[in-house]
Length: 179
Length: 288
Image (cartoon, helix red, strand yellow):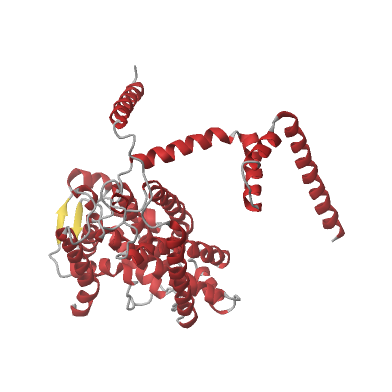
């Protein structure tokens, strides 16, 4: 008996047990009493999509997409301001310039990959700090609980509000107040 | 002209003969006509239903769809029986009014993605992904699109603005899912796929930002390659993977083009299909 056969045996045992447990619940059938796809959602989506496309074409008509001078590697670095959705990462990068910077020895692994000393500089502060809010997004499913609205679960709603305020702070407020 | 004319007609005649022979053979072996008559006698059917039935039975006699049909029907109803009832179902709510308009945000992201695919495909016909020379082919082709190509300017404008719409609606969609608690059991996996999709959307935006290869794109590329290079131990490998070298070269724009038009679309399209399939199977988590 190989490993795969064992998996198959375990899976079929699981299914047998589950079917026995489910016999008690045979009568419970999923019924659809919520809002229907037709006509409610279709109507709502048509209205919203049409408005969105009209706004989109209005913008495309009025505001030209930017095209600056050609890239020149020898030119002095100009003023660069990224798109709004990566401003938070840029904010961490600029914040990193004011955080302590040091050099970490990387030991024999560093010798193998050819980087015996790792400089913990502003760029790495920026990259590492960017990873924190993005990584936090993967956590909520593991904190458990049934679905609740914010009124029933104020702590989760408050955590979300703090998160959004922090992103706003890093991507807007910080740029206004850094020299 | 006349050659094309005859070739076309021979092709059409060939197709007609092929279909005719196929149908003749089928009539000998399959009692399809009897099944069709039996189905049609059960009730009045419109033109759409009649055509669908014809196509469905045509496919069934060739690919034996009945197995797959029964299998997927069984899977669909079984999965639905196992899903927990939503709040609206449990308490038989007829009207859900709060949060309700915010439930279109995922659809807006999807619509934006489709618009981006269509406009991006047309832009890709004229864009040249090369960074060598001054001005580079990439920049020259952007100037061509913006100034000479008919409708090129408006096409790029739509592509540009739809990007902002897509990122914004993805962010807001995520906020809606969080604040209505829809990411909880049984929808954890879909939340994680959504997080991956949001990160990939940002990478999409960044890689597209570099493609014009103007001064702004160059500055953004410098910031990006500095971030990639700064990672401990694996920094220069990440930079080589994403920017084709630990320093910016003319090849960077080619690498970004490949990421933007091949790698990311394949991954993102697959994830979107899985994301929507899971929503279809599990149903929408209604607020309560």
